[in-house]
Amino acid sequence: MRGYAALLAIIGWSTVILQFYLILRNRTESVEETVVRFFSFFTILTNMLVALCSTVLWLRPGAGGGSWLYFLSKPATLTAVAVYITVVGLVYNILLRLLWDPQGLEQLVDESLHTVIPSLFILFWLIFVPKGGLQWRDVPAWLIYPFVYTCWIMIRGAVSGWYPYPFIDLTKISTQEVLVNAGAVLVSFLLFSLLLVGVGKLGKR
Image (tube, rainbow, N blue to C red):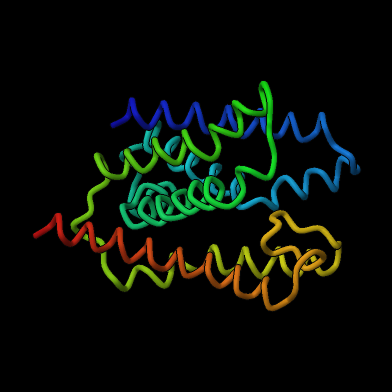
């Protein structure tokens, strides 16, 4: 498991750092605004979560029960991250892929963030993460992160006029459409959370 976690950590951090370099190189706004926008993408935040959890499993797999390192290596936490990165991959490949055509290094980074890392982490979850202790009551806590993120980008977008994703961009589509789209994405988090807990319970049986 540690070898797989090491691979995920190295790919994850390398990809995020490369994306940070590219967004700074191609920026059209100030450095400060560009940095804020970079960390306003759910894709970036979630890939960082994957890299962070993988790093802990690689370097500190036996972290004590009272530390935040232990929290990042808990099966429930890893399952939540699997849900998040699954939605990242699906939303991009179903809704966003055709909206732009990256080339060269940008294409490599794009594929890594939205396809390679999600696929590798889902496979990691299937093979290595203990699932027998997953509970239905875990699910509401897993939804806090995407819900808070959605609230944050909507508030910041209303102030700045910039939104990270077109399906929640109030400058281009109606409030009703934004609410429907945001609601659909949040429901997808719920459904995938229930699915993974269900897989865990079936495996236990």
